[in-house]
Length: 348
Image (cartoon, rainbow, N blue to C red; front, top):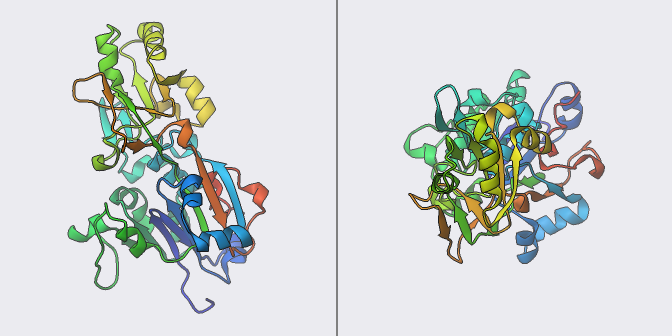
């Protein structure tokens, strides 16, 4: 490894890998390359239910813990937290989508300017360290790829947007094969969230209208362009009021819906879940273990099939974490959240 060029990579399933040559990072990574993997929707129950000998060996010989993930328990929130080593109140990413108050419209989180803290790729770039970003999903490339020397994702192939040397042949984004192609080694591993079966869905905006307590808009932070995955439905929602005077009536109505665990005010949600107040609604609604929220094409309620799974609630906010063969890594007591997996790499 001494003769290998320094390399930083984030693969999204997602994976992130680092080797640096400066300061504290030099001391940690002068002798080895590090690959950090973020597995999308991976909970301990999946780990225990299948034969995974390499992960078993990592658990035996390294650090293994179950740690909280960040809320809402969706990909962008946790991907960006892991990639920056910071919580949403610092990095500004509070969902896969957000409500742009200035434009008065819902927008996907795809603009890198929305990320308010430097990623590990940006920090590596500042030190002259080459990096590579590999992801199943293009949205990860869009937000984090600017400072990576190499990028690769299946959706970028057709658009000729990969920064990669040589020919590229990747399977489709919805196949398991693309994950095998992107991931063939690991040292640090965690996940963005778990997954659970969901049986009921609410369109909270339609429900509010039906109950004569209309709201401006309801945002499902789970929603992204990959509608095939979860139909844009998730276990939490941001509710934006038309006017402050509607607060009590709307909160009472939402609290009374079957499957709603809690309705938090903006201040309560920001404090409890380390969220940026300017990028969440007047209320944050949390579902129970079988309930999700999102748009239902004119219906307020829908029963979901037995095969449906999703995430976003507190019931999916726990992830496994592995640290293996990482020289100078902190002790197990340091890793109390999934976003801390790589947070120590560039700390002086």
